[in-house]
Image (cartoon, rainbow, N blue to C red; front, side):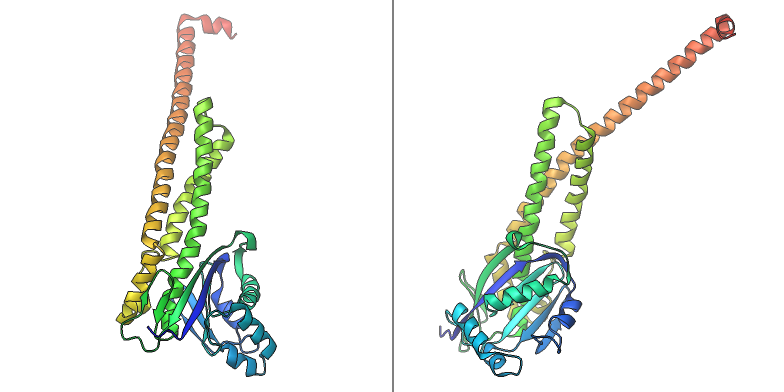
Amino acid sequence: ENITARLRVRSVHAAQTIDTVSVLTKVFGQMSEMPAMRHMFGKTSVIIQLPSIQDDSTSSTGSSSSAKQCNDVDSFFHPISQPRFIAIFRFGSIVFFNICPKDASAILDKVKKHSIDPISRSFERKEHFEVAISPQMEQDAHVTSDFAMVKELNINNVAVISTIMAQTVAFDSYNDIVDQLLATFSEINSNVKKTGNFTAMQKETLFKVVAQNNSLLIDMLAKLGIKDRSDTAWNMSQYERIHEGMKLEFEIENRFADVEFKLNLIQQNAKFFLTILHNQKSDTLEWIIIVLIGFECILSIMDMSGVGVSLFR
């Protein structure tokens, strides 16, 4: 097929939450250093189109030297006339289309200023992919192991591809948290195996693990929309193939099933330990009641025998 351009796509999970409206108005507003040409809001995102490197270098805000610098760094097969897009998601992911590393890094720093719980650079989860442009292709857009092939890079293609790219890096971050929970739970399990009892700190840790375990599953379903269908693919059938192809390429369903299995494992074991704690508490209360009843019986016997009167006189 006649491929005229191959463009880099980079995704990064940068924070727990991003204020997309604030980013649009303050980072990409008309008075900013990088004003948006157009934008489109989705359920959980905003997609921003920037001028091409070629257009930006000839504008009043652009610089030909910086455009050349970006082009030299990232040139492997992408004409500078191709459009550039950024997709920003409320659940903390950012996806760059045809944005050179230098500009992407600067944008990332600015976006983090409008986020909650930003992730430090060394702990960010990242993913790379490519988009191949083939204007003469006759079949619908499709996905290979190396790239997604489309006729043109438009905002609808960006919406479909960026959703999966954003989910995959956020999913990696959630998986890291689940693995940490498993490690914590394993430590509790090991200590209980040795001592046969819970310490006060272990009880507190167990309750925190249970609460975080429940919130993670809710977040993956509600915030990331792992089980949701793409609005673009739903409304325009020509984008369905690329959406399904991206989900298969990044194994979204299989990875969700693996994490769900880990969460269920934690939940089942937590129920076991919580049941033990409940039974221990019940046993303690029963013994207290038995002691109180016994003490009351002794007082009654002493009172009836007359010993109590002389004893407490």
